[in-house]
Image (cartoon, rainbow, N blue to C red; front, side):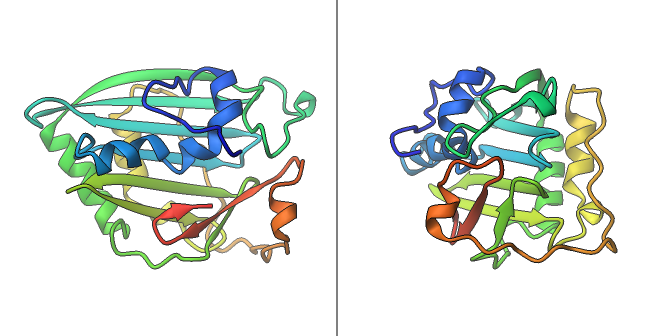
Length: 218
């Protein structure tokens, strides 16, 4: 994936863009650059991986001038026919289509979302080493405040995703009418992490994973 950086000018709704830069988008490389330059205060990116080959959703919250209104772009990516898709780790989501909705949020709605995120651990987690597998259900949240990036992650292998507050807030604010995919129940047996070498992680494969390292995904 080297050289496949996602930038502010990239269009993640374009399948060719996603194919080349999904991991960069997932790590919010573009937001990180803008944040360090002081140009991304209050921005938040959330991604819901609901078993990669079934459905993925993303939510982009962008403050407007004065921080009294916020734009939220919600996107749904899913395969037209999973059995016909042959995607390798170097080109995830290349064959996926997407639905999109843009909503205008007021400050009260934005605060309600950020409060829910914080109550679920955003800004307080210790998740170094957590693996996020493509065939699992997980959430990633990345935000910018005072030129600093905060990353949080929740996975059904470790967390009760049904108990999180912020997904309900997101769903109520988003113009996407389809309900969020239901994650596995908390009491369902969890499979242990499979063993991968570094070469396995980057090898051509239907499945892949990212690892939380500090406030980055690698």
